[in-house]
Length: 263
Image 1 (spheres, rainbow, N blue to C red):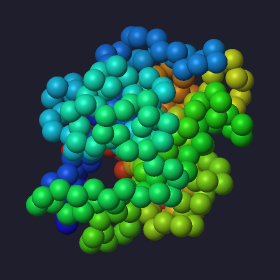
Image 2 (cartoon, helix red, strand yellow):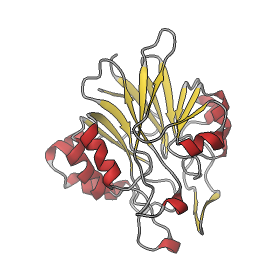
Image 3 (cartoon, rainbow, N blue to C red):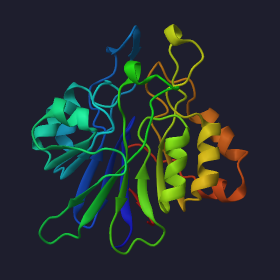
Image 4 (cartoon, helix red, strand yellow):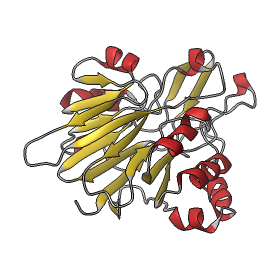
């Protein structure tokens, strides 16, 4: 297969087009302005809407849902889109809650996707932790995804999901050859939980990329919500101070425009 087309629709929502497949990550299509509760006294307001409405996205073969419990990764309009998708891949608990054709993958388990006249795709669930140690009762389970197919030149296309940098994510660098890394950033914090972070900062992303050594780095999910504490300028400063191979790998996706990525 040739280059992959990747379109950043906003927040964590990315359309991946490869070999006739159309995969959508963490669908969020609600308009801005609403305040969403995340549990245990945490909440946030959406500040920016999607560049493309859900009705205009077109056919979706697969939804890669890192987690279903937070409105900034699955909102009402995104949830309404799920029944029309051919397959939903998420956490085991998320699959039970979403129902329908959802597949729940534990970390390091795989799912083979097959369709007529298209190449086979393999989805591998990767570890993620949406906060500090012992935060799972607050934040819930999250997963990342590595996509593999025959003919990849640089390695898997990996989507981190909402996670901090910890041992499970470092394990991705040890176990996988990653060609393209789609990293959820933002350095999320909430007043009620003080200084602890619930997603990667730019500095953490740089440290991770030094281990991954990917050909391409695509930061997403760093703006558009009040609970993000590090937007693009902060992430750009962190990557500007990174070693040259990391700096050279970073590409900032324009919202709503397909970009060809060599995978």
